[in-house]
Figure (spheres, rainbow, N blue to C red):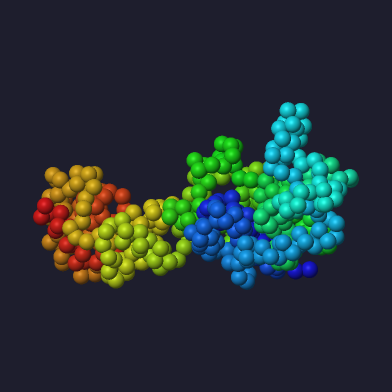
Length: 467
C-alpha cells in the first residue's frame, strides 16, 4: 500500500505555526514511507474563505519547503460529489430527511440545557415517514448513525480511543439549502483522494468517530488516524499570538530561515534520541508518526532564534547576500550596487557568526554598502575625538603607502604604528572601527579594511577627519 497523506487547511486566514507543523508531519511521513503528500483547500465556508488566504497558505508552504504532490484540491468545487454521496446514503437507508424546524431544535436545546443533559439531536425524524412532513417543507439530510455498541479508533499517536455510539447523534450531511457540511465533504474527499493516513491536530479527535462511521457507511475502509497534540506556549498555556502563534510569513519577515523553522517544528512533539539539529534527509529517514508524543509541546521563540543562528552560520554566503539585499534596499534606502554586493559576499563569513536572524544580519552588514559619508552612531562619534582622532589622522599617510592591502599586512602595520606611538592596539582599532563601520560593533576590523578596499577605507577615514 502506498501511503497518501494530506494537509487540509481552511483558507480563512494565514498558515499559522500549528498548521505548519501539521503540514510538516504529513510531508515527512509521506516521504519517510515513499508515499504522497497531497494538499486540499477546504474552502466550503464561502463567507470566510478568501483568495488572499489561499495565496498565503500556498506561499507559506512553498517558503517552508513543503512541496505537495499534484495539483491542490479545492473542496468547494467538489460539492456535487458530496451531494451525490448523501443521495447514495439516502438510497441505502443510511441517511434520512429531517424536517425539524429551527424553532423546534432551539426548544429542544433549551429543554436539554434546563435538564442538564447533553445537547444533541433526538432523532425525531429518524424513523418517521417523510409523508408526515408538510408539503414543500424544507429539510436537512442527516446520517443515520449506529445507536448501539461503540466505535474504536486505533490512533497511531493516541492509541486506541473508544466512544459509545449512544453518545453520538445523527449529524447533518446536507443543509436545508442543499450545501454539504464539513463532515460530509471531508469524508468524501478523503475517499476520492485515496487518503490512507489522516494526520491532524487532536482537536479533531471527536470528529474522527463520526467520520469513521460515515466512511464505513459509504462502503470504504477507514484511513489510519494520527491525532497530534496541540502546541502550547513556553508557559504551558494555550498558544496565542503573545507566544508566537503567527503566520508562517511572519517568521519569514522576522528573518528566520525555512530550514531552521522546519528543524524546530519537527522537534515539537517528536524526537530522535538527543539529536537537536538534523538535515531534511535525516528527518525523513528517522521520522515515524507513531513516535510523536501524546503530550502537548511548548513553543519557545528563544530556542527557535538560537537554532536559526546555527543555520545562518552554516548557510551559503551568496545565498545570505541574496536574502538580505531586499532588506538593505528597504532599510538603508538606496539601490545596492554590484561592488557593494561583492563586499557583502566577502564579508559574510564573519558577519553571519553573530547574527541570529536575517534582520540582525542585514543590520550588521549595512555598513559595507552604505554610501559615503558613513553615518556614525553616538558611541562611534565619541570614539573619534581627542587623542583618538589625532591617532587616526596620523595613520592616513602611512596607510596610503601600503601596497599589499591584506588583513595580515594591515594588522602588522597597526601593531608597529601603536608601538611607535606608545599606545595599545585598541587605541587605533576603535577609531578605525568607528570610521569604517559607523559603530563599535563589527567583524575583525583589519578584515573589514581588506574587504572595503584601500580607496573606500581611506575615503571613509578622511570623511571622518573632514567633519
